[in-house]
Amino acid sequence: MSRQSMRANDPKKVSGELFTLTYGSLVAQLLKDYENVDDVNRQLERMGYNIGMRLIEDFLARANPGRCYDLRDTADKIQQAFKLYLGVSPSIGSWSPGGDEFSVVMETNPMAEFVELPEHCLGLRYSNILSGVIRGACEMVQLEVMAWFIADQLKGDNMTEIRVKFVKRLEDAIPAGED
Amino acid sequence: MFYPLYALASQFSPEPKSSGIEVLEADNFRMNCLQTLTGVKFMVISDPKQSGIDGLLHRIYELYADFALKNPFYSLEMPIRCELFDEHMKSALEHSEKLGISNV
Image (cartoon, rainbow over all chains, first blue to last red; front, top):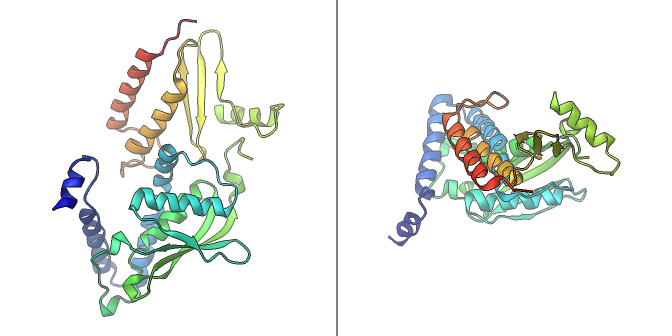
């Protein structure tokens, strides 16, 4: 049980399995409550949005990343955050010609490690909470983006891929002195 | 009240690309302000001889990110009535006071 003995040394870390189980039971309960896969996708995104709004401050306080000057900086910071919070190292790629869209590509998705989607849930975006987290976090730093899954290993794709598209800078919300 | 002053200061500054007010010194006190990238401002009013306020402000930012934001019962933009936040703030302030006064 070497994985457990490594975890035991850091009292603040929770086991990855507990996280995966917790998230899984959340999705299962939402499916029972809403019965409709689209509503569940929407709820997951909204929950993610609320998490992102709060998580951004933790990221800024701890990693002290500094302001992003273009979307490539933003993509780097998102990559950093995935590493910090999920322990995965996604790659950033598939930039659109205009430079306003990119993909966050994960080879493994710790949230869905033991999951298999049943037949009646093929429209479910299981990890949609992550799209919301990206959207919520960016909005708090005055960047409006859209984020959505375009590939999911749960659906048979090779990778799990989130597409992020720049919509606009929220000029009115920019804090004083940060022009 | 402070926010408009902060915003005006960044406009009035003779240096281009200035931030807002970071330190305000008076005879009897000094006020330090930390503005985060999300626009939240943390302000500390202290004795002018107190040192280590920048570190204290960062510590307070971390405490906010932990005990206010990670508390699901705390709503954003509302006054922070979280006991854990208050307790940790108190220790951070005591710690800073112990380390702090520089005899200039």
